Every structure is written in C-alpha cells, then in structure tokens.
Image (cartoon, rainbow, N blue to C red; front, side):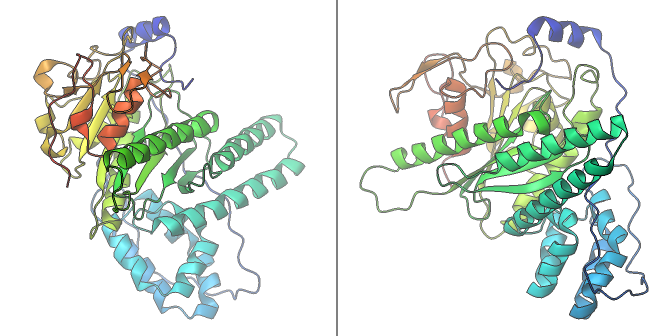
Length: 452
C-alpha cells in the first residue's frame, strides 16, 4: 500500500495538535564529475555572475547567467570544451540553485550544436538532467548517466569509508538509487524516462511513463506525506503505469471500433519533486511552498517544450501534495487543463475561480473514514459546495463503460489502489473526459469543456 498519512488516529492527533514545524532546507548534492582525460587546463574566465536568489516564491524571472553560460559554451573551441566546463562547474551548478525560465533554457539549448550538447551531458549530467527547458530525451540520458556515476562513486567511497554514520548514509543512498534504477525498467513495452534526479539525503526524482515529448495527454501525479524516493519510487511508478494503461485503454475504447485514427499518446509523470513531510513537520506549509515552487517549474518546463503542440495537461494530487498543487495554481503564473484533489487538507484559495485551471475543471475525491477531508487544516475546504469543485466518486461502483466492478477507497491511503473507482475517474479526467467521471451520487458529473 502507498503510504500517505499514517494511521488515522495518529494523523488526527497530529493535525489537531501541531501548529507548525521548523523545516531544515534541503541541500543539493550530486556526484562529483571527474575532468575528462587529456582535457587541457584553462584559466577560468568570467561567464556572468549568477543572480542571488531573492527568496521569492515561484519560478521567477530568468537568471541572466543562463544566457552567459550557454553563450560561452558555444564560443569555446570543441577541443577545449571539456576543460572549460570542468573549470566552470560552479557556474553550471548555480543554474539549478536559481533556475532560469524554462522557455529561455529551451531556446538557448537549441543554439548549441550537437557536439557541444553531447559534451555538456557528459561533463555535467546532473545540471542538464534537472534543468527545465532541456528536451526530455536528453534529460533522460543525462540522469541515467548521473545515476550510474553516483552509484559508482558511492560504492567506491563505501569501500574505504570507516566511519559508522558515513557508511550508514552511503548504504542508504545506494538503496535509494538502486530503487530508482529498478523503477526505470520498461514494462509492457512502455518506455520510462528519468526526467529529474537529486541523489542527496532528501532525494527527489521524477519518472515518466510514456513519451512526454509527443503525448496528447499528460498527467502529473503529486504525492503527499511519507512519499520518499527510496521507499516509494517503485510503487509510485506503478501507479503511473496503471494510470497510463487505463488512459490508453479508454482512448481506444472511446475512439470507436474500426476507426482509422491513431490512438492519441499519453504520458504520466510519477513526480516526487519535493521533500514530502513526515509526522514531525506536517503542521507547517514550508514544504508545501517548496513543492509548489518545484511543481510550478515542472509545469512550465512541459509547456515550454510543447509550445507548438500543447498537450492536455492535468495535475492529480493527494493529501499534502494537493496543498502544494493548489499553492502553485493560485499564483497566476501557470495554468493546467484539469486538477483532481484527493484527501485534501485545503489551501488559501476560496474557490476554483482563484485557480489556474481552465474552465474551473477541478474535481475532488473524499473517501469514507478519511480524517483529513473536510478538515480545511491549511485553509478552505475544496470539497465544500461553495468551493465549486466537482465531486468525484471514490466509494466503489460499476463502470458503465467497461461494466467492471470498481472497488472503493477507504481512509486516507487507498485512492491510488488499482481497480478502484478513484483510479478509473482519474484516468478519464486526464484524457479530457470529465463528462464520464462518476460523481459518487449515482450519475456522472456534468459535462466539461469539449475536447480540444
């Protein structure tokens, strides 16, 4: 079972008892890159001062250093590029500390010739793999390389490390990275791509099931409490796989028999892009704001690479992750086509009209015996009638399309279980068929905006 909040009784006491929690900022870490053999040492040249983070929420304005960095790379002789990149590793790293706009990165990346792009992946895979605006196939290749290098470096260090605490940390990191590697295994012929990887203690990672470059429908899964990469990345990827298969199946079925049209592609992002909370820090919004920043950048990254062919973009968020998603969509900086919230403890927005969701296309699922729903712990209750969201059935039903019996979700942790009414409804929301979502009141909801 996927772990969201802990047992209902524990959570209820925590939610009612905590008033806040101090959250230590996560530090970025990645494998050290060894300079390429034979690379000539060159005197570091100034390629632009990276802007200092203002601390403002959101993706922010593009960092001026990005243009300087990419322009300098393009100007360097290819033979000297490995040494140049290693000499300026800190400048590259700062692109992740204060990320430039994804749209700017997308344009700047295109200005680099293929040989320079390849060298950048080779020397700085961690930066390339986590920079929004870089094509997803390139990021996948870079993150795979970063994953292997980090595993190799940790194994080597473990062989010589004598400190007990350090050995425990290295073993924990190796277990986490091994689970990421296992989660990347292709299933049923469907490609999985590692589009982000932070192998630090509070690891973050995102795996895409399907092709994010071409998919007509893109769904981003946002997790809640206790969704650490090391323990949950495999299970979270399986949820994405299940959703992918249901969406593909519905598209084929709803397309009609004998149709000559090609079934539209789908992609599901198993996103663990922020440090999810545990019992000791669930009472505050610090991590939700960090999650909102990261999610905002992710959504902007998708949209920047699909400007000429925008997908139908959905966010499907659970528990504390729904609060992070709501915070991101309240800012007015990014919009999505649909939003589904399960077990939500609320947010600042008072209604769907204050969210960046086109047509107010917001759905709310609330399971029986879930102690979090209706709590409005972090603000208004998305499940209240005044909020304006559409009810989404999660209690179990007979599917009028497939005629299968769908099981119900109970408590806080069963929304993403396979074979549930909730997963069936999420699949339809993600392919712009909200008109077929079961409301849990004996009939489907009213029809959403027509398919684009």
